[in-house]
Length: 165
Image (cartoon, rainbow, N blue to C red):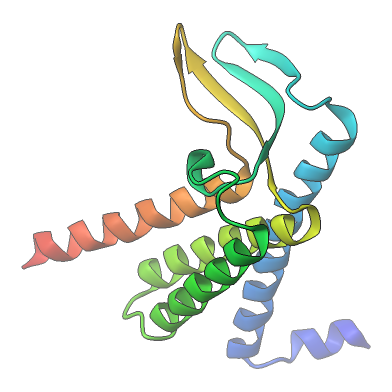
């Protein structure tokens, strides 16, 4: 009977259900990947996957790229993160087109996944490590990828609007 009720839902409710499922999926993928890293890779261990890609286990006590690590308490970072997410939700509610809405939505997913991780652990687990020769990019996680993709979507949308004018 549950399947029948989904089939006769109004279209806007199906879109809301789809959005909720995507939201839950993205956050669970991030948190589960961090769980796997935490339980299977020793802290600061590096596992070489390709010549430029390693999986590692790093605890990030700061914000992006470890900035302010150890100088701001996890509680304050959580509060600041929630305030930023609240502002992004405001932007999402007032967004004018779909690409902007999806970009903001994906940023919210990434931000909340990292906030949940910080709430659980007191830090964020980073594990994707890219490098070329002696050039290294700071470790990151799926939530960071979501945030980056969302920003790219918003910038692309902004450039598209500027080009139309």
